[in-house]
Amino acid sequence: MAIQAQPLHMHNTDHLYQDAVNLLQQLIATPSFSKEEQNTALLIENFFQQRSIPFQRKLNNIWATNQFADPAKPWILLNSHHDTVKPNKGYTNNPFEPLVIDGKLYGLGSNDAGGCLVALLACFVHFYNRKDLAYNIIFAASAEEEISGSDGIELLLPLLPAIDFGIVGEPTLLNLAVAERGLLVLDAEVTGRAGHAARNEGDNALYKAINDINWIQNYVFDKKSDLLGAVKMTVTAIHTDNKQHNVVPAQTSFLMDVRVNELYSFDEVIAIIQQNVQAKINPRSTRLKSTAIALDHPLVKAGIGLGKTCYGSPTTSDKALMNFPTLKAGPGDSARSHTADEFIYLNEISAGIDFYIQLLNAVL
Image (cartoon, rainbow, N blue to C red; front, side):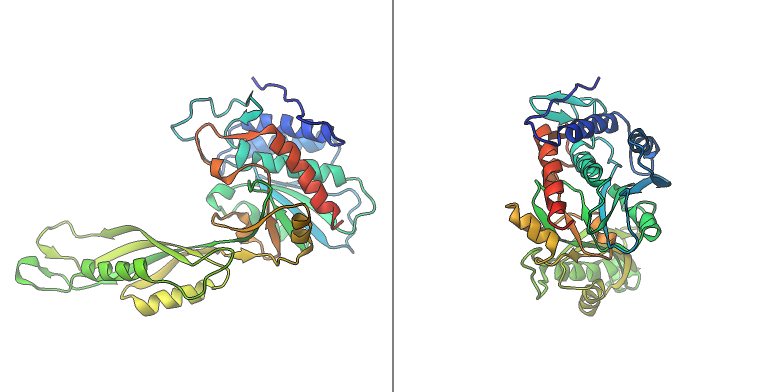
């Protein structure tokens, strides 16, 4: 059973904090694996209905706009996700029981990214009925983030007005992830010629693949980002169809995970690799682009003014699918994501609500 949380310090957003924690406890208690978020979507719908806030839904994506939205004004998107990974076998707690112990709220999705989701939602409610805003606000709770699915934010964005900039809620200890590595997944196909191993015949595709892999392991891209470092290439699997010990393999394939900084396009990275390996390179996934928001953007300047640190994030989020400037920031710690006995500190949720409100106050 959920334990009623108490605010760790009193301020004028106490009601927002309590509502946020209550909702997060309900979300934790409701399984919402990627593609199976229908029940947490209902909880978010109910949250809006109880406050007479109109909303829209497409599959398991829920969104709402501020009460006095003006089509003549630009739009800000507040987005986080309500799907989770599946719990790993290391859990000692019930992952679906929202336990509060020593100021920590335990449960699957509490940190990634439930705390961010409810804090952004509280921020949206705070500004919902203001008439004097310089921007319109859209709050969106999206699905399928953990699997980068096509029925999450990618499905939702074409249904929204043109967004000027956004905040993506992910656990960053409230620091400012101003850049994010892109993810490029490549299949490499190496062709040789079959032959008898005993007679030194054929052209060994496996050896050719090993030469390519050695180059991949040792190559250093010229442009190193101050925020994201160098492009990182990793070979993660290798395969040959050959099952006979005495036959030189004619075909070998291997799989590459390439984390790209904001200084290279995916096409540039693929071209450099193809020029230096014998394998034929076939992109499997090119959707998750590297991104960056300018350090002089008003959101970033506001965050810096609150004493927060800018950094480049090694992890990928729905930010990669947005074609407008976005700041990734939120309560919680990325290091706790996908770990056994996941938790978020209650005071992180409270601080997150205050942070988002102060950040938007600077631009609204």
